[in-house]
Length: 462
Ligand code: ARG
Image 1 (cartoon, rainbow, N blue to C red):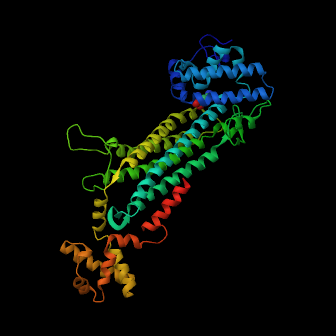
Image 2: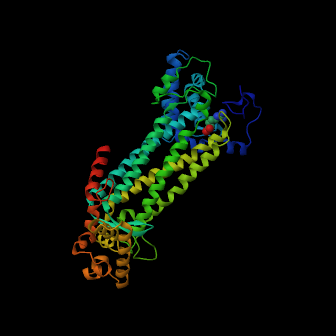
Image 3: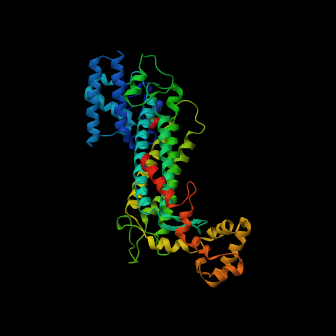
């Protein structure tokens, strides 16, 4: 029997209980209670296996499995009293099971340890988040596809250095994000495939002398196979790191898109109008409609990438196998996952609701000499000029237009011929933005024909 004040799970060799500060630094129940469902699923699979292998009697196993369901319903119903003295979710569940079913509860921990238990619970939790991230990305991609389809041939300025470069299509711009979020989705899918091995049965670090069946528990929990090395199984947190790495890149993509929405919704750009549902007002300036959701999404990368760096730093230098440092893995991942899902949902909502201002996009598409490259290309094609010379002639014409305060199509044929005598009326065909985008037919280019092909491909894929 343990002394009154020492821990009922491991108090055998202890004469005194922990200091209050020790308890405070040691306990994880304040946050790992989020893994209650995973913990109970893991225990149910473990108990069933202990029964099937004859390690426990059927009556013990059925008492355990029934009791675990009662514990789960207490937790789900909010009536469960979590205890800090019991440190973590694993011991809280087991202690409550003992209250409910008595002695058989003590047999549940046969052939396992909290080390393989926590690795299993956390993996199951992260796996659910990977699935949620994939669904969130798919929903966002569908919203982007709808925008791309509606405006496959709308023209807008394409930028480099945030300076007008060449006209592109709205559909093409939306589809650029579909590509980015598609890569994010495949990163999560990839991480899921790699992580889907069960740590359960690795026990403390060395495996166990009981004749357990790790394949059975792996299958029951939806894993592809048991992890092959018990030391690695209890000390591996790559799955959480890969989740955070994929989440960081995804959050970076969300942040870039959010930044564009902030710029585009400004009075100076007016490229898009965000819905009231995804905007806020100002308490002092009545005219204001602020893109707060986009700004917050832009900022989320900070905490998500922060979590990635934090967990990398926790794990670096840890000797095999489990160390208590690893308890510091969860809060960061919980926070990163919560915020990634929120950011994905908010972005999907904004994209679904936003309306692109076709006229503003088109007006901006032609400004800033955006068809200068088309003019240079025409000189090469029609006059057989080397591109470098064509670049120079075009530059001279741009300077002329700039000096007159007009755009390239506003120059007369005489103006053009004063710079190069062989230019003909024909040149004006390529100076229109619609002709410009339609001509960009190379694979992956901005022509509406190419954009529609990509939309069809992605619709199939989703
Ligand atoms: N609360 C612990 C964690 O989150 C569970 C594992 C504890 N194992 C141990 N040997 N103390 O990592």
